[in-house]
Length: 463
Image (cartoon, rainbow, N blue to C red; front, side, top):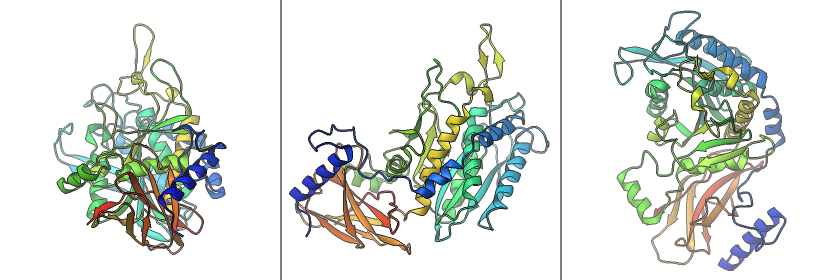
C-alpha cells in the first residue's frame, strides 16, 4: 500500500526517534544523525586500519627534503626543486601500481603553460597521476588530489627554501597513502589519484587535469582535494584534532542562465551535486571508524583563498575541499625564519600532526571507497510538474550496475540541512509520494545488493 501523507510522516518521525533511543517529540532538531547515514562495512574498516601514519610522515618529510617545490624552480636537478619532487612521486606511484595486478597505472601529465598570471615565462606544468581502473563500472570516475608545489612569502620566489609541509605535502601524503592501500583492491568504479602542480601560481595543474577529463567526456561523479590537512592546531594554540572541514559550494560555479532560472523558481540553492556529495561524506565518514567529525562548510572555499576543486566545479563536476579545522598562518606561505621574539615561521614538518593527517586520510578513504563500491548517483531525476496536485511523482533513469537492487526516495523540510526521511521504493524508475512537492525537498538514491547507497540526486522539474 502506498504511504499517505499521514503514514509517511508518522512512520518517518518514529524511525528517527528510534535512531536516537527516544520519542519523536523528544528528539531535538540537529541532535540525531542524518537518516541517510551508512555504517562502515567490515571491508571498509579493514581498509582504514591499513592507513599508516609513519608512511604519511615519511612522505611529508621526503617532499620537504627537496628544498623548494616552487612551480618555477628547477625541473632537471635530481636533488632540489619541483622536478626532483615530480620524479620521486612518479616512482612512488609506479611502485604502488606494480602490486595492483595491472589495475593501476601511473603517468606524468604535462603541458607547457605560456606566460600568464604568476607565470613569467613558458613553463612546463606536470601532474603526477595514478589511475585505478574499476572492475565493474570503470566509466564512472572519482578523483582525489593534493598539490605538490610549494611557495614562500613572495609567490614569485622560486629559489628560497619552501618546505610546504602542511601546504601541501600533507595533502599529497594523503593521496599517496590512499593509492597504496587501494591499489591491491578491486573498486567497482575508477579512482584517480593526482598530485598536481601549479596550484600556488593559479590552479594551473588542476585546471589542466579537469580540462582533460572534460574533453574526454569522463563521468566524474565526485572530486576531493586535500589542501592544508596537516595540523589541528590554530594560530592561538588551540587544538581540534578530531575535526576536518569540508568546503562545499551551493549555487554551482557552472550554472547556466537556464539552470539559474529553474533554481530561482523552485529552490535548490542548498542542493547542488556538490552539497549532495558533502552530505554523502558525512553519511559514510563521520563515525567511529574514522574517529573524525566532518564539519561541512557551505562555501566554495575560505575568504581570499581557492583550491584545486574549483576547476572541477567550473566544469560541472561535483567537487569539495578538505582543510584542517583552524589554520596557523605563521606556517603557510612564509619564509623560514625566526623573528626577534623567537617565533618560528615557515611551513615545516615539525608543525604537522601525522596522527591527524592519518585520520583525514581515513575520511577520504571512507568516502572514496564507498563511492567506488556503491551504485552511481542516479541520472535523469525529475519531478513531474505538468499538473497541480498535492502529491509528488518522481522519475529517474535506471542505472546499469549489475548488482543494483533498487532505489530510495529521501525528503526533508525546505529549512532542514540534512535529509531526514527515507522511503524504500524498490527497483522502479517512477514513484508517487503523497506529499506536496511545494512543501518539501525530494531526492533519489540508488541501493545495491549489499545495501550500499549512492549519493542523492536532486530532481529537476519536468513539465
